Amino acid sequence: QVQLVESGGGLVQPGGSLRLSCAFSGNIFKFNVLGWYRQAPGKEREYVARISYSGITHYVDSVQGRFTLSRDNAKNMMYLQMNNLKPEDTAHYYCNRNPPFDTWGQGTLVTVSS
Image (cartoon, rainbow, N blue to C red):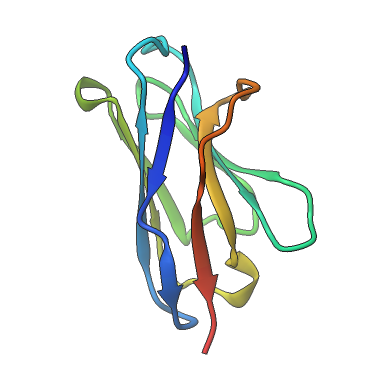
């Protein structure tokens, strides 16, 4: 019913950049608000950012100005451009609806370290 595939994670140095991608199934209504979430080692999963069908975005304060959300509704894709990465950004990143469905994808690991 719902399938989410995240990709683009990797190992980067502090100050580096990564672009994450999320492919979502076509049965997710186009007018749904979509979001990114992350779970750092030993911590609970937290909300990071969201984007509406028309492109209106919201970010938590810790990533404001560094992360940029975008979506391509025709391709069922959502992206997260991450700039000036910090060690505290290290986490598994997940995409989902906002508010999220109970089903989660595999996530993609972002590691920020020297």
